[in-house]
Image (cartoon, rainbow, N blue to C red):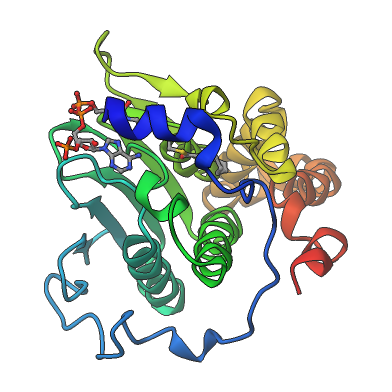
Length: 259
Ligand SMILES: CC/C=C\CCC/C=C/C(=O)SCCNC(=O)CCNC(=O)[C@H](O)C(C)(C)COP(=O)(O)OP(=O)(O)OC[C@H]1O[C@@H](n2cnc3c(N)ncnc32)[C@H](O)[C@@H]1OP(=O)(O)O
């Protein structure tokens, strides 16, 4: 580990971090894994062929539990990012799925962030594909129509922190040995500008909280229609504003950047 970090710090890391790659438009691969075989034979709903993302679907609640399962540290390699993207697409299209919880099957580690070996000594084409895959995960998780929660059950530096920030809610195990944050700046990696957007959302939670409150209001409305009609009307405008904040990076204006 130390040797890898030293090599990166010595400046051999290609200055590709933060470069946003254009989408290649090859979304046709969505239901194939990186080697081209079909994906996700049913196992509690879904599973990825290499089990690098374990999916346990609770049919009663419609909540899918996604466990990253690439020991030793769940580093986000191109194959893992690709499989995760495919699983997310599949869940998004499952009309029984209402939400997902992203966690880790590896003890004490949520994710070590981007795979350092995917960022060194590779041809330029690889870097393009890799950063496109990173960006895709951001778009898919943050832009998901499913409620998503990160259950951070271990250390989660850099890109691991990204996964957590992409979720609607974050819950982290209370363990002083678990770390989270942006250590990648020490390696000279500049997080892309959209990372700021994610941080902004976490540091400015009112819209998200507001949505939560609104969900409760609507629920009350269903059970006590007469009492709640006025309240619901009063909040409906606010709700629209909140939704636009919460899903801000995927509105037409910002989405255009990634076409
Ligand atoms: C931020 C999001 C926005 C945009 C993306 C751009 C910015 C993001 C950049 C990144 O994500 S860069 C990656 C930064 N990540 C790190 O620097 C993590 C470094 N790793 C650690 O801090 C620790 O390994 C640990 C995750 C806390 C786990 O510690 P532990 O003591 O349990 O394990 P150990 O250090 O012995 O590692 C075991 C094994 O795993 C290999 N390893 C660790 N991290 C990575 C990694 N990111 N990529 C590839 N491989 C990794 C490590 O080399 C060891 O392998 P070995 O046994 O063969 O030596």
